Amino acid sequence: SQQGEEDPQALSIQEGENATMNCSYKTSINNLQWYRQNSGRGLVHLILIRSNEREKHSGRLRVTLDTSKKSSSLLITASRAADTASYFCATDTGFQKLVFGTGTRLLVSP
Amino acid sequence: GAVVSQHPSRVICKSGTSVKIECRSLDFQATTMFWYRQFPKQSLMLMATSNEGSKATYEQGVEKDKFLINHASLTLSTLTVTSAHPEDSSFYICSARELAGLTDTQYFGPGTRLTVL
Image (tube, rainbow over all chains, first blue to last red):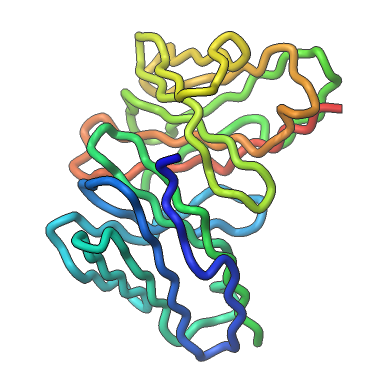
């Protein structure tokens, strides 16, 4: 399977703490994207990082990409209860298709 | 921003019946739409890529005769689950890639929960 791996599978933190999720993938990529999914809902696009970029910020989100290690991380700073969701990385290998990682379920407690 | 809708949001059907799910790009044109399946607490698995005016490209292991895809216009793709069985119960999500988009972003629909009794 070409599916990426994410860790941890589940993460439980308190409001105000930072949450870090990691993603590893198997093939060369054009870009890597992070999505959020609330329970039973569709996906919300969070951020895209291209293969020639190493770090990207968007609000409280910080994404890093290490193509030599085929890995990426998503950092959510100062987490809120509303950040509770599943987070998926997805790689675009240049054939328009996205390959999703296994996901991290984040629980932020008030 | 770009919006993708799916209809219905939920469907319950009897085993052996066929179910059609619609995916529409509401404010943009999409030459390419994608259909994914997601089992509970699992990730999204790509089923097929749907190109307007041509046959869909199915991923390995996905039965094209069971999951019929039609992409008749630049704003509509349909997935028909034929002769549905309980093991087809899943969350089906579509996404669309904008025709003139300068980014590589796919816009996802809200999903359709299919339950086959």
